[in-house]
Length: 232
Image (cartoon, rainbow, N blue to C red):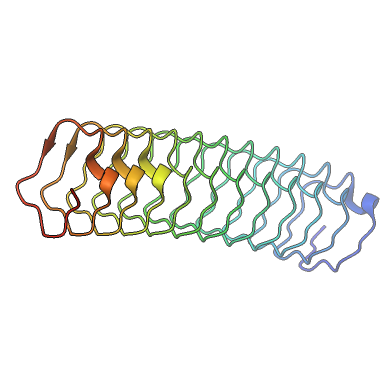
């Protein structure tokens, strides 16, 4: 069969025993059993709101673009996947069992369970307001740039990290368990617990208004230059 276009709400048993199929375009709201036994499939574009069981038993799939609000069970059993771009608000179970993944760009507000079991990941850029559990079990990570207001648990279990630049207003627990770190430049208004458990550190330059507990437990430190208004 050659089906260049499918309209929504086709009944469950419509294509139960059809193999293979060529479907250049899928419209949303296709029922769960639509492709349960079809293999293989080539799908260059998927629209949102496809039901949970849509691709439960399909392998492999080539998906160059995904739109938001895809349901949890969408890719539960699919391996591998190549996803050059992800849009926000993808549900928690989206990639629970997918390995590996290549994600050159992440958009904010991805839910906590998004990458819980994914390893490894290459993330050249992170946008702020990523939730706490985002990288809880990911190791290692290469992060050349961090934007402020990342939540406390962001890097709780990550080791090691290379961070050439940090922006201000990072929360207290940001680096609580990270070792080692290389930080060539620190901007002001870093909170008290920023380096509480970090060892060693190389800090060639400090900007003023660093808080009281900044160096409470750090050893050793090499500080060739301190700027004014550092607290006692």
